[in-house]
Image 1 (tube, rainbow, N blue to C red):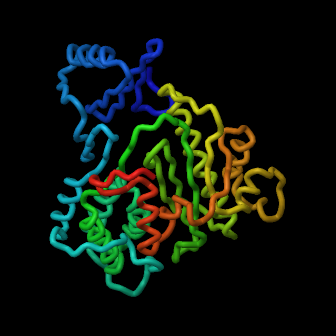
Image 2: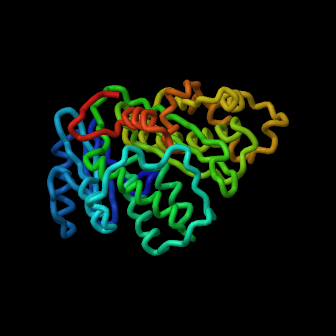
Image 3: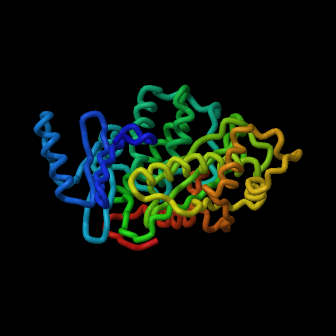
Length: 343
């Protein structure tokens, strides 16, 4: 049966057995809890189509998958090496953070224009890398805002990001087996972080056991008048993602029996989500963001407070100092393949 929530996902259930197939153009990933069901599927497919069984997955669409006793490790080491060679940065000196902390980039900063074709090619390559490297998601999202007319400062910041990747070639995400299948999320924003239009940046991350499996960083569509409003909008966007994730998990036989907890470090935005009363501070907010109140009332999600120090989504909203960045990177599950710590 084709999933109604994800067009590339197909699921077959047979009593307590399940077969999951993910399709990308002419590539298939097959998994399940019954070996015979998997073998029957592969045999049927190869008898109908001209197909090759590549066995246990090790490489898929530029992603390297290492399946071991303690878990699964996703990375893109070869892809990074090829990218560094393409942009002649294979011998560069590494740095410890993707962006300079507190540096504010803007469209017009007085520097000279740079080669826009080369810049766009670099940003496109970096965007694909964010599939396994959430630690560069914010930096890549920020730099992609300047693709229309990039300047030397923007290209310099992009080259710094390559230098960061040079020092973290072996990094990826560890996924360890867990018995708990309840997802939890984090939502954060950086109020008026954009220097060009004073719009805020939303960030979210979702965990299922160890390591995050869904994340995002995006500039908000409208200007927020307060920190609480920016956090409220970010939480609404996280709630939309949470609803979709709940549906996908239900399709795969892992329904979420309780509310999905979304952690936010702003008490005012949590109060706005739980209190449906309109007042001067909320009546101007676009009605689509009040979807958050609706799903909170239906107990699909539950907004919870967490201290700023424990806010994982902080890494998706701003450039951070080294210690803070490295701490959150570990909390996301992003680490060197040889390091198998639990977070």
